Length: 442
Image (cartoon, rainbow, N blue to C red; front, top):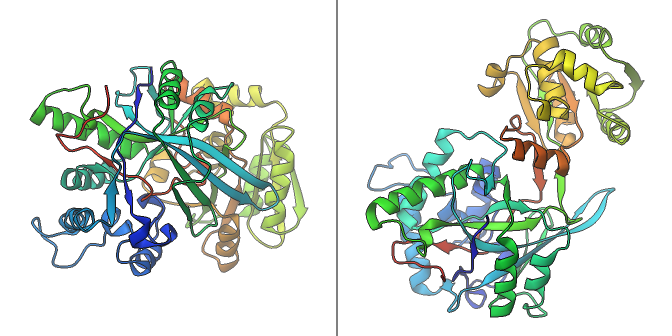
């Protein structure tokens, strides 16, 4: 199953950059253009200069954001801004974060080099479809840097928490790397080099499957890069390019938080909230209440503790709460075209029934980016609704960890934007070099 190795990580020299907070960043695919600009301004050695550089009007094949990234990576290593650890290590990694009205959590895991295997081989399980363009971008960057800049987020099941207990026994009292990101998430990394601690973690991972929580595009890119390197250097079990940088986290830990991604609907011709309400009531019980979209979110959370529920608001200080009292029968009658493992998911109830059947929004239109906007922050959906940027907002409960695991094991994939594992893994804490001569311990 999971073959995990320690590696000699590359990281910032704190003596040169000072506070790591100034040089780390979120993963590239969640950075807005405004945030990209802000991170470039924050520090001339912020990791975004390499991982998510900006294109210029006069870019060409020999001079572009990728060649600039490669030059900066070489320069920063040569000048000592980035340094490489002398000994292979596994890196124990904690993220402490607070969710309003829910409390403070600590998500615990470790960074290691996972042996790459194709989906379907029974080791790594995806839950999302990928798109060509992001993979082309990441592969172009990897080709010029020979490095994995950003870890993929993977989950494994360890009810006894044996893997992380082994690593904790080998770590020092204080972290080696620490940063606080713009969302207030505290990132702490310990470098674990003690052989007994590493061996205990590696051996206990050997019977685990790994479920990708975030980073499907980067994982498939790593597979493509591995195949290119095999063509140049041959298949070699000890080669770093046969592996991928992975943050591995115990899905049985209480620090795992999945947040919902809400939907806003726009540009529908002849949309009527009353017509939609009548259509839904022909199939399901609906309660209409006075209140704001924030009240709708609270209502769907409360109803979700008893069963499946979805709320929507078209403004006007009222919202509607739909529940599914006979869920299995409803799904069998109305969502038979979906696999059984998917039918009862909140996002499938929304997309397969409310959007497609009742509003006429086809899956092809959703994939093409039409009619649907996605919101991690319900307050932004509320603001867009008030401004008339969307016609209505749907509020959902998140996919559970158990549902996520069941779908991943089934071989099916979740609908687009179905999971939001919070918080994101930091980019710039550890870099994994995968040049042709880089190796991991046997």
